[in-house]
Length: 229
Image 1 (cartoon, rainbow, N blue to C red):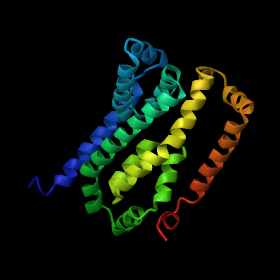
Image 2 (image 1 turned 120 degrees about the vertical axis):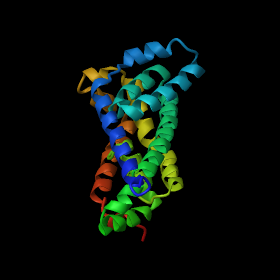
Image 3 (image 1 turned 90 degrees about the horizontal axis):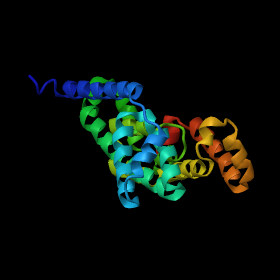
């Protein structure tokens, strides 16, 4: 009897986890100062390890806390080291969430949804690596939603992991570099980012190209465009 409803039980478990994650995001709050003061107690090596562990733990359960860790990491470690640590943590989170959803949700979705979903899943499983790379590189779809979507489809984890490893650093380094140089003023002064970019032409040019790439990806997000030719 239980075997018959195995996929239902798994899916309900997944929904409960996601609801708890959403609820935790409402009640759990951190600030950059608290994180920095905590990290100051340790040597650089231990602080780096603790930052990665905290990032994985907190941002996995409280998805919308990532911005706090971006800022705290940039201010405490600087642009280069914080980008490396965030990148490592995002790889770990992608692994955990992908397999959590793949194990708890995919069986139910495959059994319950109509053939239209199966056809879409099949097309997404054939998505070109370039598109996987672009989806991770541009700030269009949050990483957690990409992890969820990849886990529910037939995309192989090896291909998705390679896109995570190669695509994520572009977005992560840009964010960490800007935050490390602007500091907390980006949270309090609306024009701090614009003023900084105007003073740094190369970064300004790259920042102009970046939203154009986002628009390009958004316009091309169609099943036919995503599939291999």
